Length: 415
Ligand SMILES: Cc1ncc(COP(=O)(O)O)c(C=O)c1O
Image 1: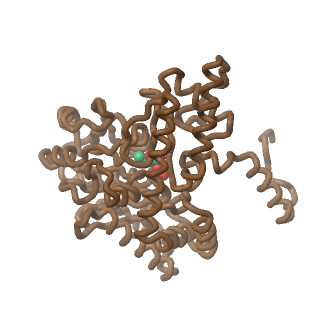
Image 2: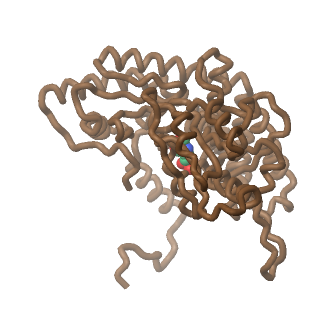
Image 3: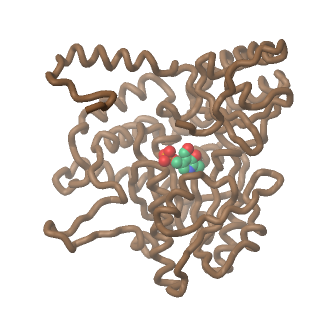
């Protein structure tokens, strides 16, 4: 056989294996220079320690068969109720399912909408959603799997979804509309009230992709930051995806998909019986899943509590201000984003040149292609690395001005 790597003939000792793992780990980027979701979003070393401990306690339990694990089931139910409360915007009756991440949450939303549309608009054979150009790539992927289309409409001059343009794009196959809170490429919360009003007028499903902001925006709003309403307080919003493994500070993989009521949640479940082992019930698309991540998510929610989330949000937003001011001083042009993402352009150099030079210095940067923007994803830990980022960026700018060109950086998700 000519495969590049194969199973060892003989097993190795645990000690040796751990040494190998440490060697692999040495190749990974410095955590203090990792600005994107490359690592879990973490605020403090204590939280990391707690999550590791909680995860380990439930490492081996399979949440697919939670009927055997009443403790695990209780933790999951608690997480769902907490999530419902946070995303509800004060409304009653919100239902939540746990998923493995934003991608699965969005898949579940698109799937439920499609099933709902089969009841409501049985004549539609090629269903489509309409969303802004800025909607996350994974929605296109879900639509592809589900035999649907995501029609992307240009965003407005402010980089937010343009509800009027979305309305104009509605066609005979449209079953739903969506927006983001905030969008990944531009960091702006879309005008969900306008989009949902269009949805109500045309009797469409309206989804909010709050994978990034779902567990950040509620605290930012309480702190007085202003941005468009997006949660279930907005009439006409039917489903919301929100990731606990982003600003819930839980380890990956865990997210939530929330439904306005049971009436919509009922389109989510698929429970086959036509096989030899009777009814098959899973929480979402994924079958077997780790109990560890549920225990860790439960732990972090209880460790932080409302006070902790408020504190993390305040600190993250303070760091955003510090970084934004610093970037402006360096001649950069940051976009006026709403929450925890910074996107900036360099008027002098292509974004790829800046990202390339920063990547060579060990920073895990990403960015947006259209227009070219450099992205920083902030978490509470960013306060400890903001000065270092700014001073290294200042050096990079000096080098670029002196004509020192490095390797071009990658703005997207290339493998
Ligand atoms: C707005 C938005 N939606 C969805 C996703 C997909 O989330 P995940 O990577 O957890 O599948 C992301 C990821 O960054 C995102 O930013």
